[in-house]
Amino acid sequence: MHKLDIAIVGCGYVANDHIKAWQKVKEARIVAVSDVNENAAKKAAETWKVPRYFSNLTDLLAKSDVDVVDICTPPQFHADLAVEAMKADVNVVIEKPMTMTVKDAEKIVGCQKATKVKVGVIHNWLFDYPVLKADLLIKRGKLGEVYGFEVEVLHTKHDLMAANEKHWCHTLVGGRFSEMLVHPVYLIRHFLAGEPTVQDVRVSKVGSYGWMRSDELCAIFKVGNKIGRAYVSFNSPRDEVHVAIYGSKGILRIELINTTTVFLPERDVSRFSKGWDSLKQAMQLISCTVKNAWRVFSGKWLSGHDLYIKLFAESLIKGDDPPVSVEDGFATVKILEELCGKIVEQENV
Image (cartoon, rainbow, N blue to C red; front, side):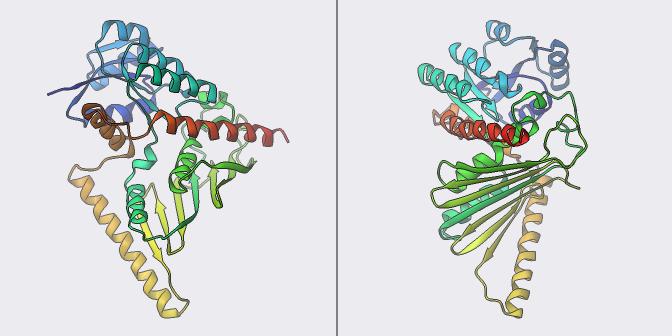
């Protein structure tokens, strides 16, 4: 039985991930889509067999009875759309980043408090299998006290956004970086368990795209006495996302694209210890690969988007808090806005 009627607003690339995720939620059905490009909305409705399409949210809300508006537009439009939906007493889920500015984020937080509807923000990497496994190992005390966190996000020059001179991301403050830096920021907040302060940002230009002022970035953060580092490239020979979490008892190494998590415990420096350690790492990688294959072939594989939307739907049905709140979204946007400002400063040096 359907308990949730869903509307998708924004029918670009990321909307496909959202639609697939909602279709895996048995209690939900997508009843309408909307896009300022009416042809895009029509095409999405035809492709995904959605009964109604619109060219604006106002008409959609007036002519469709929906429980959730799922916002998949570029982030500079998130605030106005979210506020319109909330004022219509409709729950909202927002693709990352929640907004690009603190001012817009404050609009969403204020409206949510006033209307009391449920609003969630999709920080999807937190819900990928290797990150969930890392959470479990840390909760079990395998790492001891967490000291530091590093993430490397490596894209090729063929990245769909970076390689497209006319893509909307290049109009943002901070360009392509600003659209994706939210991922490292919320991971650092999560694993270092606090609000990061930006210590330093450095950018450089390696590639040949004239519309990108910089395409390599390194940022340093602090949370108390703990240090986080994020490195981003758009010149890699392959797409990779590497995460390292350092603790008093061991290290966790995560590869998000290959979906593996490897725990590296304390060891001595003997030749035997190094060999045994290499064997244990290989066994962990094999175990991850087997589990991933089983999930895929059994039809139980869930992406980070899939799991987040599943949990968000459950929070609506049960009356619980969303998996990622607007307060989490606001805290992340605050750091993101500062980062983007420092990127521009560096590019103007």
